[in-house]
Length: 337
Image (cartoon, rainbow, N blue to C red; front, side):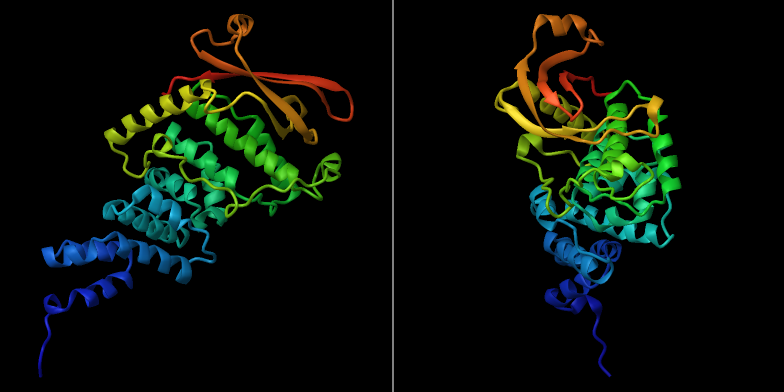
């Protein structure tokens, strides 16, 4: 009876075994010897593992492999990081992986590339938890991912009321991460309001639904190398420095006409205040926002004298069916901290 050692298997068969395994098993196999390392530690291997997981383990296949490819190129270590994060996401849903400290280090990046975990109620409840201690780069990823999601209308009227109370009672932290967290909560409220056909608020139910782009329609890929987001998954000091550089570069670009040209944009807005928790105004559509250079009057009236005011956005002669109104806002560069 002949015995075949595993080490003598051809590379093609070793690669096939690796693609049919999970990410952790493949990484452990790559650590056994140089030959297996050369066969298993390959970007195509982990891409295949991710692709198989979307087909066999998840309910849908929304993961944007092209976006991951643009970010990771042929770096096998970065592909392995995504594959391990995918494996941990599945384990978390099955109750096998519940590390709260580790949660924020890998989930935001999965959301940015439209991982199917974004559809899970566990993920929705966890990412809206106001007790999460996150920084700017993590909150930025969460906000981007939420903008790409379709609204979730599976909450009852009582759940909606409790959610809005929690949202508007949330204190505003004077940091960029705090503003992003507040923005995240506002996005959740607006998404629910715009797509509501029958809700706790009768006047909101009469609003014509404005369709929002779903995860598969809204592109979240970086615009170029200058906009390439650092990977929150690494958690290293280098990645933190990279994020701060990206934040300053991206925020400063707002002052350049090449980033946001002068002109008009069509949009809508809705308003809700803590003093009117049960009344959310219907969205006003087709408001023309005009970008203008900042003047000395705005600089003098700036709430934070240390913040750098880059530009103002104006909207005059707007109408909401009741009366005309004017919108004026300033774009400021907040210190990343």
